[in-house]
Length: 270
Image (cartoon, rainbow, N blue to C red; front, side, top):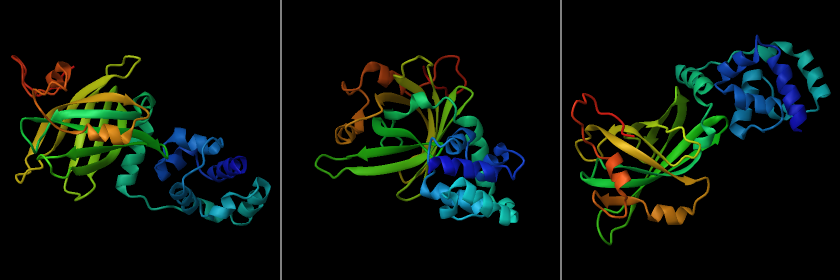
């Protein structure tokens, strides 16, 4: 099936100036699209519907034997170049994906994220982050587990977003999924060692307190691996005192929000 699908997709692309144009108009990055063309990956159901809407064919037609599909296309060639209205957001995201996905493979997996909490001043918050690839996009989920008082029920906040790798920096942009009241942006500073261990950077967001003041804080990502025991690692997430011995000195120093002598800007710390 996949060989026929790839040949059918390649035929439809031939009605356009280039495959790159098709990728740009669909908002799918070229490496992922090439996997569809070569039969390496099958599109998800939602991506398949986007492809069919764009080219003016039905899903079952895309899966026909190539010779049969070729005859079908020849009798209705005008439908293949049907334009699809694209929002500015899709266009910009497609452009970013075209330039910002290469080099992210080594950073896929699970991390503990550490930073000084914006809602609970003086406490370090440890959250769980999962970075993964879906349909040619690198996305992530950040899960907060906060238990503000002894014996109380933990609160779980979930943030979802996208990841780009631009000029040797990792950019993460997400939104809070429960109330949709907040977006955060994180810029990480990779060390470029062969082994991913810890990555530092800065995070910009809004305080979860009633004032909702925009805040910037240093952040550290600690790599856990591509597979984890979710129940166990989530149990380790939460608020920690700034001097808690469970957090080593490197972590505490990396997220300390101070400005050194001679510094004029709030900068990430190596």
